[in-house]
Length: 135
Length: 164
Image (cartoon, rainbow over all chains, first blue to last red):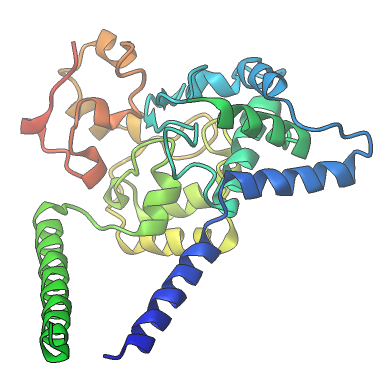
């Protein structure tokens, strides 16, 4: 084994690891770009608005907090099946918002349960901004 | 230190590291073999085990799983649709490992529902009505509340502990 091939292998591993994880900050930047494009009046994300959105119902029976609770650094429980849900705040659970496809899948599914429609980039960005403040 | 000694230390570290990894992998595999009770598939586990326990494929028959998979967008009150690739893999896994028809009854939606089926009700006849609705259990869908091994497909009745 020579030193070069080892360094090369480590660099390749780091590259693969870097490509497969997005991270909440990168996702947030994506929502910001999408929000700017869909709403010219976009004036940034708000943690306070995100927290409010998370705790309120939006026409349906459930709010986000029905299952995820209002303290998303702690775990929640599925309102119907009772199955435990891992913490949603990235500070408490590094897996959260680390993969764009998974994040989008759950926003799509859960927004449909709570709002009967998909969430807007503004709504997703507000909620994620708030979740990033939760310790 | 002489370069030769350095080289020896490096080689030793690589060898010991590799052997430890190989041994770890073998041990994990052996352990999994011992505790695995039913068939497993990572896509099925991820998609069907998020909101409820990933119900073992043996609990429904092949045609019943096909009906279930065809109506994921109307799945007991929620839209649980998955992408086409995941649906194909999960459907194939469920049908390959499906059980016999146990006389599963249909929910109002027309979908087979495990928890109201005759065999399920009979197996759970010792459970008090209040147990199902207690705050810890919530619903018959919450297998893990009483069957600690539910996630592994272990429903051994001697291991049941009803939280009261």
